[in-house]
Image 1: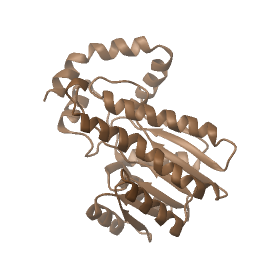
Image 2: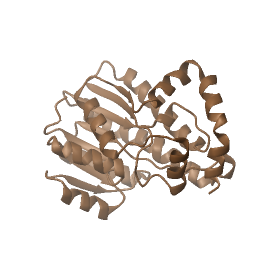
Image 3: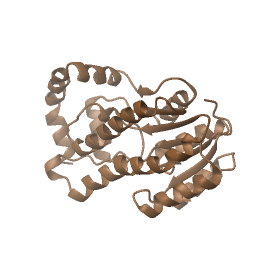
Image 4: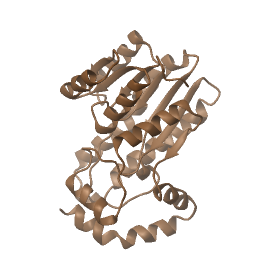
Length: 260
């Protein structure tokens, strides 16, 4: 797909990865509809871009927020829907607040599904269209301290895979991008310290944005970022016991940082 002049709805545009994606798509002359809850950040992002883009200040976890986004797309048109929303909480399951668990499931999985369903009729009308969901390596590897987050991203990956097959005979490409650890405000100080203690490589939002553009312009429909993380995804699918043992050995380190 050529990005130039494509009308793109980008949810989570005020977040670190969302802002990087907006900047990269702006370089390729896409026409953006930037959706987020933080009006100030959205306005700052809009002013930093070269193109004439539109803002929708909305909470996509609400019916009114999703309705506002769909109404804007009906007015502006839509070729591509990118879901870059996400919240994360690093905490052991038994200590986690139930409201926090619910928020992660709704924000990371339920709302993208509901919005995507409402946008699909618009996408099906286009000669070429796409849905791209931003997931996580933790959508394929269950990791201690991130149980609820993993559940939400496992769900998003499964939803994307099923929808790919459901729409295989249509004009709508469905793709899934799974970043590894990325330097954004989504990470608490404890998560940053944990990544350092475990020796995890952390990517920049710009790297994620570049991978997304590659998916949008190419034939790839599924991409797991980073080495050895993408290898662990494959090993975990074939020999889950190997990854299980490796993570259990690190459990004392993970538990220590989760308590901070």
